[in-house]
Image 1 (cartoon, rainbow, N blue to C red):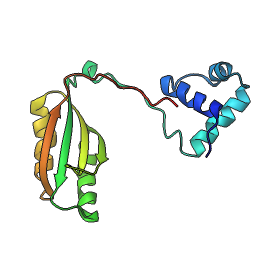
Image 2 (image 1 turned 30 degrees about the vertical axis):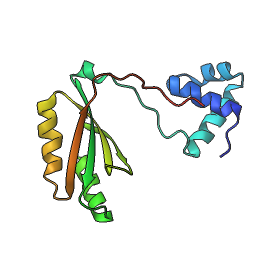
Image 3 (image 1 turned 135 degrees about the vertical axis):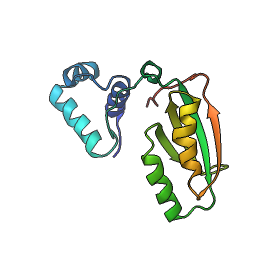
Image 4 (image 1 turned 90 degrees about the vertical axis):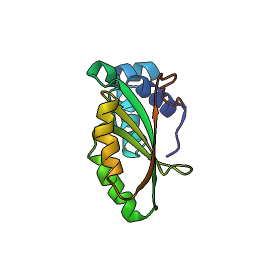
Length: 151
């Protein structure tokens, strides 16, 4: 799908405020509500807008530790990736997993109440997998940028 200037403007607005009403969005982009809704639906149907989510302040919920974990498997095979994915899907504190190329095979983003909880919930479960070769944990001390990609 080819995006025009209006589509990009819609995406930028929705990234900043996904709860904006269609009427307010229409007024902001100077289109009728019907035309605006049609454009948004088209962006959704084409998979450009995947979902609408709330940004959560995890420390307010007691999750004070934010970690980045590099995982290297002993061997990358379809079966090993499947086993790894099934395992991480069961660990709620792993919020994101990227398959990457480089020193690690996967990068995990983890929110935990504390380091001890992380050790029990994540590390022990991942080290129990015979397919895991190496883990490296980085503790995030400060998030300097967490913004969407504006088009």
